[in-house]
Image (cartoon, rainbow, N blue to C red):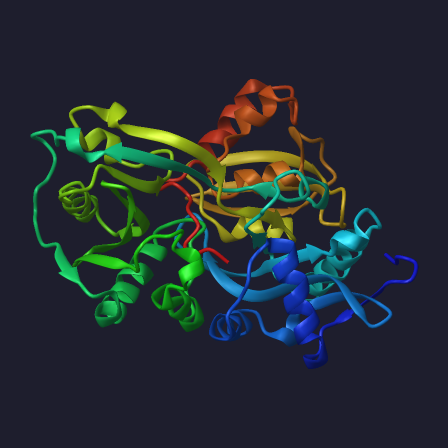
Length: 400
């Protein structure tokens, strides 16, 4: 795709300053030099794509290859996209589509089966075949009234630590957790550096990070104060076992002089069910954490495992690229074979819907109710819901 007067090309070192100005403008923030260096380690400049008018950078998208856990525990190499922006002076000209056309051409050439990103705006990306693939809930707990049920484990084993002194222990726990959780990525050193450097712009006026560490989990949190009222914001909690999660929550809800504890939970987190009053875990916001697009449907569907056997034909439409078509999906012993077919379709859906279903967070039945899946036989709908179900909620491992 071409846009009159606009050149789409790879970024060069000479573009670095202009890219920084554009990204800071689009996201309303400032980067300090150290943080910018970490971003460039995560997303090398030479992998970025820019839209240029004359000598002015008016659009930008950066990407990198990362490994993400899919249902069943396999780590699959995918393309992670970030830093997508178009100058406010150049909106509504097709620049985003032009950059995405080139970006996805490169992903297809690399043979990567999936693409993913975290979206600032939710209404833009369905047209490119993306769907939200994880769900997360921001919650607040009034810890003054929180009491644990007698059945809640009380194993102890949690210690207070200086985050920087236990970085390797935290990283080891994360890697064990990541291998169990659909949507979680392997974590490069640059991402750990950004977390532990804890730039002030990420603190929201709070303190720097505190750490609670268990052999099978950790919680990183910070304090906020409004007058005499203190709260604790859990920035990251990762637990390999249910016992570790209970131990960490006992410590967090035991923080003296704190009224509210805020955290981000998946839909089926155990926390409300550890307490005598589950209503104390109040949802204050609900959002998606990760957006996904299947680039190669047979490769992507064959990469994950399934919870039950399945035999059906999917007719998938792709409004942006040529990944759609009709595919026979056969699952035996949790493993899938998927290949193009000329057979009649059992289920018709968009690639954005299939992408939302991929990690198990969004069931097919909700899309069927919204008229975004066409299926004549309700048994087929139940079968695909059962097969795509996962043991653990999908969750983004680290924000990018």
